[in-house]
Image 1 (tube, one colour):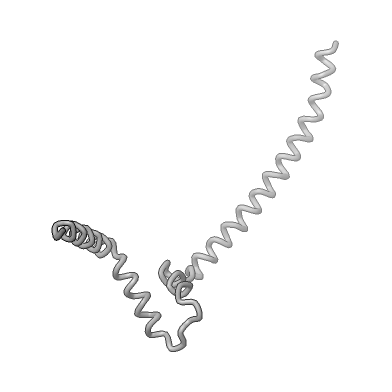
Image 2 (image 1 turned 45 degrees about the horizontal axis):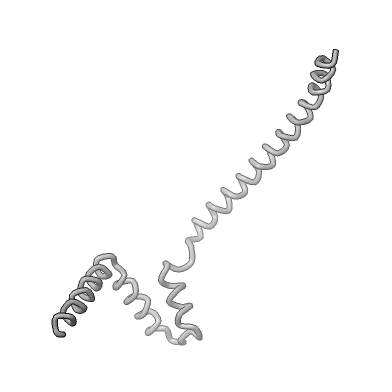
Length: 104
């Protein structure tokens, strides 16, 4: 029976080392320390941990860059949509002539 405990302890120790090496223990410890040091404890501790574990809110510069990229891509879509409509109209002017030539 003691060998079974040793195997379980060995697996736990192996898993603990894995978490430590991956930085998980440090991250969890930092978040829990931040929660402990909060002057006003949040209503939902789990939400606090979730919010602070992933690194917090995105950087303003990142958000601004993404907003600019979205704006530019929307303009590009509008431009391509207009071009597509124009090309469809041009194609319509030639298609009836092609149909008439086939019938003759």
